[in-house]
Length: 74
Image 1 (cartoon, helix red, strand yellow):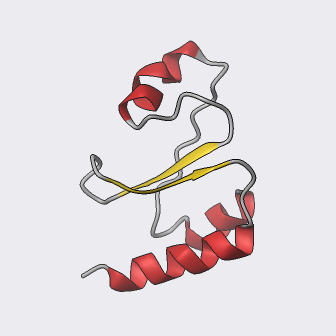
Image 2: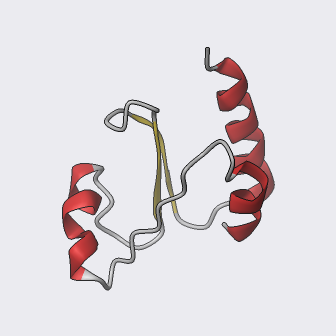
Image 3: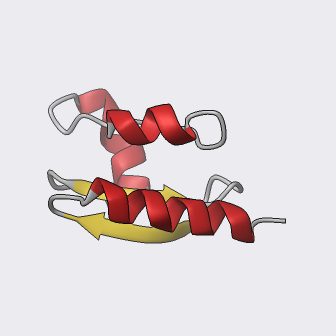
């Protein structure tokens, strides 16, 4: 995830919600991130989940997806 933050951090806000920290529970519940290794891409409106991922991520595949997503935005 750190490589993605370095690559896209100027265009995407990365929010890390540690499942072991109870203060993250409301936001995790809002986006349905209640287990470990859950990820969500939230639209610029801050409400709409564009895509979800579960389990280990392939950073290169995710980078490609994020690049395509960003290119599709107005």
